[in-house]
Structure formats: structure tokens, C-alpha cells
Image (cartoon, rainbow, N blue to C red; front, side, top):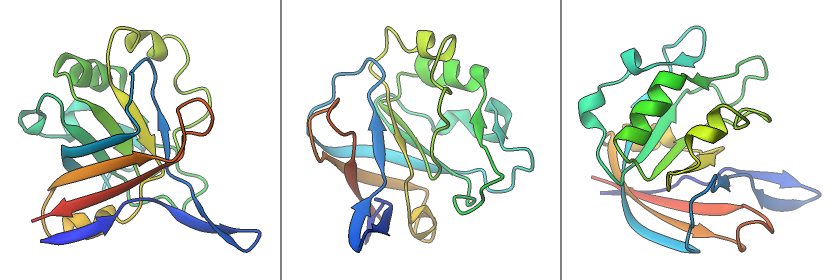
Length: 165
């Protein structure tokens, strides 16, 4: 078993800052979520950064799970991953609990029509995840605990610890 902190950390003004953020969309999120089953989907071989339903094994998606996309490109400034509308619809239909990636979700990405897709769902998004490669060293499946640093709306910073075996 391997315990991995998936929270992105960086230094700002001499302090360690957490850069992992949660976007609740329309979901009501408690401050602590534990034992959330997750799967890391390795999409690091994508050239154009567009993640579609053809890039993943849809049979691995389970209801109430945390689907995380590993792009392996979080350091690149010229890389902008994008989840296709068709795949987003598939994730909604399968009633996943959360969607995450190792990259900042671009400003404006969750405006209409995409934001409208989530108006009746309880799915939330997590951006700037770290150490996904360490999960993949063990397995693509993990169990996560998520702790929101503050109430949603004040600051959407969150800590995530995963257990892979």
C-alpha cells in the first residue's frame, strides 16, 4: 500500500502554498470527504491535449467515483488539456462524483454551454493535482480523502491524500 499526497504545493513569499483547488459547480460538498474510490486515467500520450471518450476505457468508470486525468504536462505553459463535451456527458451519465486533473482548469472553461451541463449534477472538479505518477507506480485505482481548507466560496483550496494498493 502506498499513501500519496495529491495536493500541489509551491512556495510563495517564503511560505508553502497549496495550489489544488475544488470547483463545486452546483454540487454541495462537505468539508471532509473520505473513502472516495478513484481511478487515474493516463492520457499523457495525447499530442493535441483533447481528451475524448476514445482515449479511455469507459468500462472502468463507476458511479460515485473520482475520475482523474494524468496529463504529465503540468509544467508546460503551452499545453492546454481539454475534456471533450461528449466525454463530459458520458461522465455525467455515469454519475461520477468528481473529475480531476494535474493541470489548472482554464479560466472560462466552465462557462456555458459546459457549465449548463452540470446544472443538475452533483459532480465537482479538482484542479492542479500532483504526484499522480506515484499512484500509477502502484495501480490506477486509489481511495482518496479530500479536505477543504475553507468553506466553498471563500477559498476553494483543498488537500487530497490517496491510498493505492
